[in-house]
Image: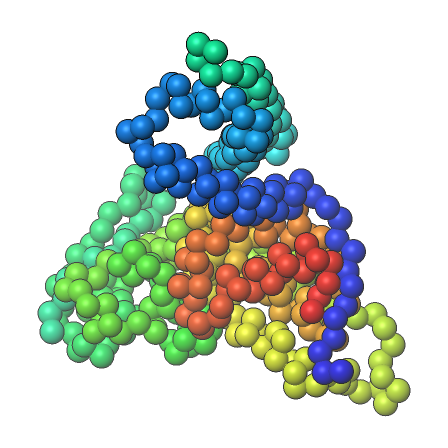
Length: 127
Length: 236
């Protein structure tokens, strides 16, 4: 053997998880965001989107789940980005931890509100 | 050719704020920026303060900002700047001591924090001589042995500008040099240090470091290899 592979024990840290999350969420966003854009802007067409169409679409359970995933991952990706930007301005680790928790709570609440709103619509307008 | 040389000047003992001195001079296109600064010192103002030692791109003393980019003043030729006006400023992100001299203290503190030396407490080989390695094992970290600690990379890094406690590209490069050395046994320690909040995760792959390195080290790649070793728990 010419090169060696050595196992090392490195403990998981929050920063590492956040960094990995940024990559995983970005990876999931590629099909989710592209699928959404191609459907809305190319297949349906921007000028054909109206309230009836939107309600009809999200009346479908599959689209509800798709949209909840899109909201959750896009928002989490963005919030993690905001966290990274704020890291440049907040020098105190404790303050930064508090800010990180606030961002996580904001993400959770907004995603839940979006999910509840999506799940609440169950029939086309006037149906 | 004639150039306008603008030099950052600041003496914290006398000046309230920095200023730029301008010198119009006739130079050879093959002159280095260091030569221009030496002309200034010899002919115009001997009080200009700058660091220089070998003047041949090896010691790493004269890293500075030339037209907004980090270079070794002794390695950049006037003709390669493609400009009539040459602005020379100290490295960003470190305190200016005087003119072009910055306080390298935080930089070396970060460097020391990653244990940049061989760690191996195992007994020596039977012959009591060297710990041998194959040429392939040596090539694994050859790239990062080229670092001359000039700080051009670290002071071009936006994450370092924001917080000088971030270890910075140069420290990670020097950690890489030992982490991937088959003779070393300190990889675990170093990787755990670099896994902290001030470690590799502050790298946003801006590539400024790779662009600034006067030794052409693939710094962003070295940082990515360290990140990979942390995530996979394997030093390959």
